[in-house]
Length: 481
Image (cartoon, rainbow, N blue to C red; front, side, top):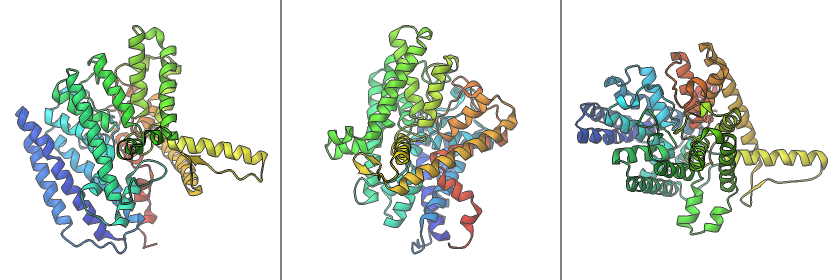
């Protein structure tokens, strides 16, 4: 195990978090809040500790995939532990467990909360809470690759360990350049949403924090009512951007960099994703028509909630707990499906659904015609057999984690709907579930034990299971095999 390399990278990551802490610290200066001193102190501590960790020269001679998985898992844990400390020190979230749950929920862009009164937080803490969504949306290690010169082997292992989806590809030959392109698109789209929300009449602080949540598909609101108190126009703007951030970023690469709109819209995943959004919105509108106040209300609330759930953002404008069972089941299905691979959204991913469906059809044809050789294609390119096998293994791992988590948190004696959707919402990085953890509830009623199980689920879901499962596997730490 190359511990020197792991410590070096974690030190760089901690130093980056120190710089990021300066953002809420400066926000506190504008609003004259004493909590800002805590964020300045956290910035200094992280920077100094980070510096001490990468004084030693980096050795990459024995840096393999195992180190990549471990450093990503450890990196997200360390980021979350240090990221929650200002909440604890300021006593805005005095419990370490609750503060860690909230911070992990932020970095993993889940949006599940233990807070009963969000509006009681200081502006700098509200900003940090939303900013963690933006940081975690594209990925903290992708950000590191974009700003730091690192070797090719190191790049690939970190990118593969953190990036969502069944396969990791490069937009351009150099991974560092790919990371820069991704963050340029990400930053540009975030700024565009902020500007449009400002023109809609939304205050600057609200526009920035809600755009962070939309871009990272996180869902932390700055009001107890989430997005319900904003105008229909502002809700529609946020809805559209939620859908846009749930699209594979290769789509924007083809449009803005390659200038190939046709190639972008020929992406199978994008077409299926947009089709699912449209069909789900129409189905909920028809099924829940009697609960809305006219056509525009029905469309905006249905479209908003579908976009919020499938992109795993988790914002809310309506109590869908009160919707008919058919509409709620559609939303539960969307929790599993999730957004596109290569987006900031969570869930199982549309690309995996497509691969599983085509694999299923191939197996059926094989039963009828045993000698038939049928390959699976996406976007006109053959999907490797190892990728198909990887999707199947991922599904098995996903189901095991889901079942075990539901079983463990059931010790709290909540109803099945609460337990199942709580795990679904955290494992898929969505935020709200149904019943106790519905859009008008939160996760504060769970025991400390259950909160740590759900915290694990949030991390596992954001990191696509493998880094965290490999990290906790005792065999990972034995020898050099």
